[in-house]
Length: 184
Image (cartoon, rainbow, N blue to C red):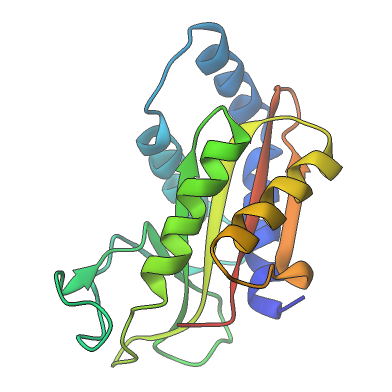
């Protein structure tokens, strides 16, 4: 498991272990609230600003596409770019966030982001790694792993077995999954 991945998993796990986050997810589920990805991003940004590891981070920082592989758009904007203290200056991990109660749909949206980031051009901003975080309803972890494997196989890609994590979110009926790549 890469060091970047371990760090982002720890950050995400610390975030979801906050009692108020589980309670908020309970309200989201009870009230059948949809489109709450922005709520998550704001709460996660607040969390990053206060985390003991003091990461450097930005929301939706523009990253240029490689024009040889992406003909229509010039930039993409990952939900977060994060640099842990001690990482090389101007070297970041990108994190995209998806939410859908249905794990299969959530993983499909996550795969679209994996494909998107494969078109990013290496430039002044060194994206050392890229990860997608999905928040979805709980299922047996074996079933969730099987769904992830299927999404990668359908995309003609090898699943990143060493860089996949699924964790249940305390005090809720949700789980989060994270997977990604070692860079664009």
